[in-house]
Image 1 (cartoon, protein in one colour):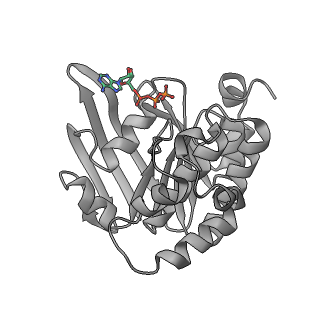
Image 2 (tube, helix red, strand yellow; image 1 turned 120 degrees about the vertical axis):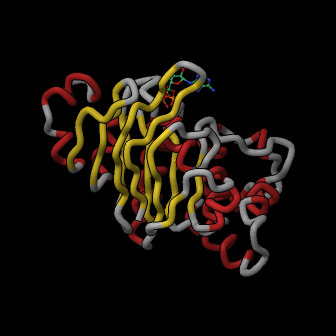
Length: 233
Ligand code: ATP
């Protein structure tokens, strides 16, 4: 579905992504783990052309994405839930959700129902300004908003960041549910333990390069991964 070859991204003279290859097959959960500054967010931002790539190729169902406008990429069914949530704080929950569907106006009510089914908390709070939601609720809203664009490929940048363990578990349960319903997912996480447990396939990114890859189970069992990312658990 998504295939990245030799992707290179630089900020001025600083190379953040140094020629990575990565594949996200349809219907799978793929995760990209790595330390702060490894280039994970940059990779996701490059896929939707929020940062310019220096070289390489990114294809989606064999169409080249490199150089396309972000709106055209979203139109193809790719959505990014950015790190730090970025909900519109002064708008209500329901307004934030509707903005997620700005590309289309059909079947909004069906989608709202579906999202409220996954996140009953959002329905209870649909008239509350998003800025007054708790961190976990804002994360649910960011995921819900992304779903309103009906993505085929949902990319999530650290959905568990700063959330309590119970909420993190809830977010990962939703990720699994969405995947079982047919959504393909590319997930970036510092919570490597949780991410590797749900992932069909995983890549480790270190200072802009892929240093290891394998199934989630393989990497969970890998001694060097345990030491570097799993707190020896
Ligand atoms: P984190 O887990 O901390 O979010 P990350 O793996 O997502 O890290 P990136 O955000 O992709 O890492 O950053 C990769 C490198 O690029 C870092 O060294 C970062 O400082 C640098 N970088 C990111 N955005 C910019 C920018 N807009 N201008 C200059 N340098 C940047």
